[in-house]
Image (tube, rainbow, N blue to C red; front, top):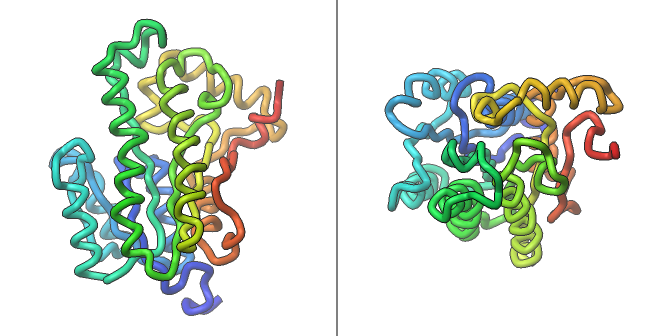
Length: 258
């Protein structure tokens, strides 16, 4: 297939959340680039830059920018750079989440106020902020895509406070899909099965969760970051123009099991 006929040819978007080559965000960036998109990439801080920059350069990213969503003004600077460079944007991939370890490993009942607010700030509210900044740049419509997990809908042992946080994120997806739909902006949540990423390593007894997913999923396998990337690329493409507001599971069917 020639470059001009690739599914995402001519589309440009921001991908947030790459930490290393095992990140879900990197799987999305890699597949979307292969399908013809230009991608702007962010890194959390100077420590992360040395891991992210080579990956971004390998994707020929024209913009490689620092972004800590908790730092005042940084998100606005990212979108200002996008507007200056491209003038508009077609998609945003939000693949970030955080919770202080003490709160992540404790009961929901015992979660601290500060821990809950920080988890919501990074994992959910930042998606709202990105949508608000992307909206005026999505002049021809577009797609906003975020990442959740089955623990948002069902109780998953040791997922703890991130379950309610991701549930809020999924609900936010539906409300923003309703609000932005008239402008041709679609909003999606992807819910991957467990993946061996750096972020997931913070979940207690994660290996047990992996084993359970393999045993119970109809496909009896783990998904990988390319599986998620393929779904993300589809949702950002014109082929998905009639889809919005949904949670799309990429988990080998695990979510359908009792």
